[in-house]
Image 1 (cartoon, rainbow, N blue to C red):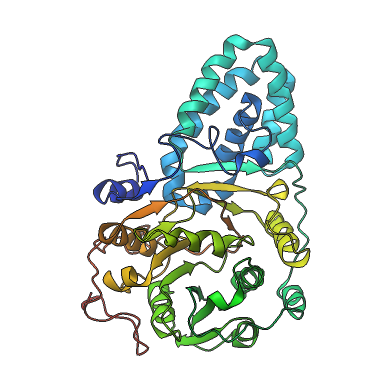
Image 2: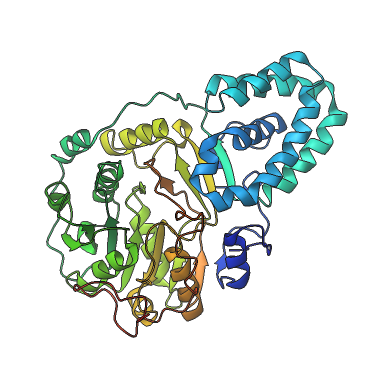
Length: 438
């Protein structure tokens, strides 16, 4: 991960002070517009009218700010640099200006987006003198932003409202999981959904996709650990996983403890571990492809993605239906719309079990949203060779959790990144290790 040194946000300060020793597989400085596994399904790839329209959406859609506050703050100056060029272009023609104003009012309107793109294409054809500086601004912004945008050509924007009950109905025909004693990989997924905010729906979609894998079923185990005051979703989850465990937890989610419990207390000892968020929708070859990387004895740690596509609700419904009901091997990016989050340290991490134990698992002092994944990756990359791959990784929509405390500070900002060793224990069923024990 090639983070640019700057201090514009707490995230940027953290990444400047804790550089990740991780090898990229995407070419250095290659941006979404130049090279991306998502680009073939986009709305025209690199043509200037499309790219300018995408930046108009990024600058005005409130979901961009909500998806990751620090990412947005870092990216905002580059959005506005492109907007200045866009303003120059649209002021040359009333129809283009009107189309831009319409998109500003309705940044999630697909029709408005297409109209602006068409008007800009006309202006660019007539004014190539204005197109050149706009293209340069886009190129510069593409290299620095942390949040990009993608809309597939067949995106319709109408949610089909896939429900938890739908997914449970679809799961009724699943082949029961075999009894697995010596798996090659253990998949551990944390869960907390006290209010039915969408996490359990997304988890069921994830689990159905994990049942539909090219890797033979006897080679992997699936464990879900639920952090809650009660085993709220046991009746839903237990029938479709190898192992379900409930740990008693109130207050802020302790994702680190939840994952540590899953790794340490699943039967057997798989040599490879996949830590997977409940909102990820894997393709059919997800397990086989990523496990194969460990055929190299020197391969120890990797994140499978460079960009994560955080889907909106209609797109989430569309890809769940395609992957889980229609049985497609890959979710259709052409039906998707979402935000491309660059260099996300979380969502999914693959590592050897020996590396997990060497670093003491995840830091159980982290509470609430943010930081534990980055801390884990920093420590893993210091302990063993780590690689950042460039696969499609789809994140399903859900209600966003709070990202900052009541004072406006990021959660867990007081913790020193990389300071956890696990020497006082980790993944204990009795509870998380206290802040003092570290």
